[in-house]
Length: 153
Image (cartoon, rainbow, N blue to C red; front, side, top):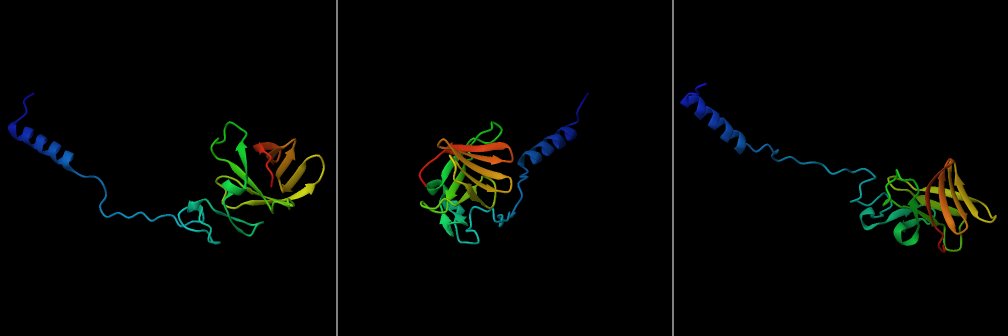
């Protein structure tokens, strides 16, 4: 098969044009998300998530769950191991309420203490936090989701 000189030049011009074409969009602006899950702006209480603060319903203030909360690690292998849950109590002297901060959940969950036996139990609907033998277990229905060592609170 013979290619004419004109055909060859047209093919080269096409290849050169295709290689020089910039397919990236020009002057395109993407708006940043403005939802409550946006970590760059303060929430409705003024807590700065980007600085590690979240609103605590039971303490009525912005807190750093990493500093004041009890770390609970995921129990099941299907969960992301680096995403801790945190438990915060009303105060160091008052454990009548426990507030759960669960990864990827926009709002915390407040549990109420329901017993003073060997261990302690806090509950709201199907979520239960149990303290037994120095360990916390966070249970959803009958499934243990998180566990962690007890610390003074």
